[in-house]
Image 1 (tube, rainbow, N blue to C red):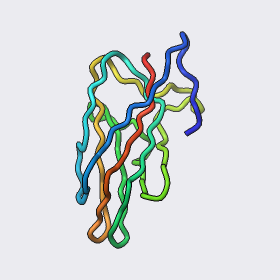
Image 2: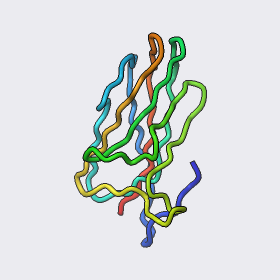
Image 3: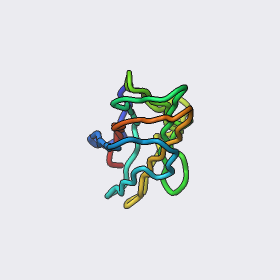
Length: 131
């Protein structure tokens, strides 16, 4: 993910790792939920699985707050390379990065497809800045 500009005022960006441990074999709307203290902007999201098996398997992650997606499209992940999500309202379109209100809850979901898909130990990196 290219490093985006942070908001005026010099707020410091940080990365939060969300580890989705174990074998994931079915579509799950809320694999993880994270409550944020203070207002935040979401700068980006990256993810990778430790391993995957199945025939024609695929896994796509979603990131939402209050039911609203923060991604342009679900993030397709693999076990071979880290993939980066495209956030809604990116600066190149004249907007801002997605904002999360004080005490907002981020939700990560997964959609699995294929024959007997198994994704093991998914690591999700959320790149945040206090707003």
